[in-house]
Image (cartoon, rainbow, N blue to C red):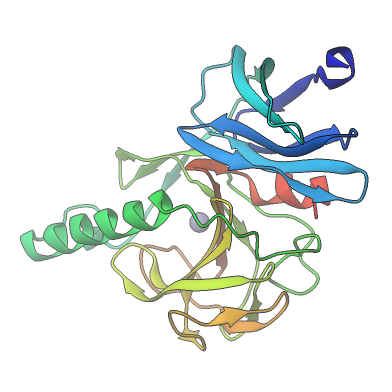
Length: 265
Ligand SMILES: [Zn+2]
């Protein structure tokens, strides 16, 4: 039986990865230990599925994760599975923004730190329930791709954190739609991100929508896939109007389009 369960997982730095096993007779639960979280697989048809992510800055090469299979007779079996992380090369971009986003006033510095702690706390929460049941969609109608994911960034000559989302072309006022079903966990103005909406889709998967000109949802709302969240804009640290769309999976920063390519349900 064990031979059927061996998997071969490969993903690039900054990519979503779907883990899959056939639903064999007698298995009642499957759990993977990933980035410090125990992630339960969900049963979909004849397969067990879990969505995970390989962070932008993960070390390339061979890794291994523990997968636990629970059986109807009460036994547990732990399998050590190899995961190969491929190296991706991301370019460096030089950007010019308002000086106050680079040389922060003491007030802005304190605010940015407070908001950083708040967003970290959000990403650290793990909602066991999986809110979504269909594939993710782009949040701007007709968008085919995004730009700048993973870019090493230099703002006004100073190096800053890598760009952890995809920038979608969108004029101010363009409707911004929920990529999938989930619960709104942040909806307000942030120093760097401007008007921001964060959605918790469950199982450690979050999507974020930044620099909006208007927010139409509130914290606690359950939003459906394709529901209007607000309008695109140019608030926060930007060079012009666009939608910054981000995806975090179990604390890994991944390219949102890698999630779409999986077509995962
Ligand atoms: Zn961006």
